[in-house]
Image (cartoon, rainbow, N blue to C red):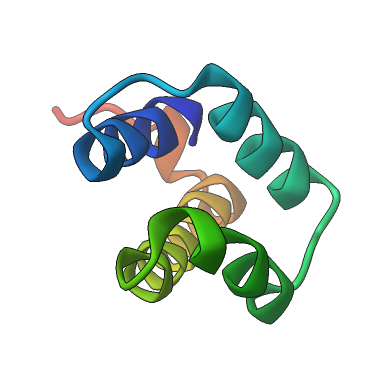
Length: 77
């Protein structure tokens, strides 16, 4: 998730923000609710905050399901 988060923050802010990326990653690891994360990020990302949180949660769910179903270890034959 970190590379995706870092890329999106770079797109929104135009510069690398390591401390913000670290905060977002640690928040996801601590299972912070989407609404709470949105509230925190709105002051930084303005209008982009809602779309960022939505896309991040979709990506997070996808990654979790991928691991649960074993897709991460399968190779294309």
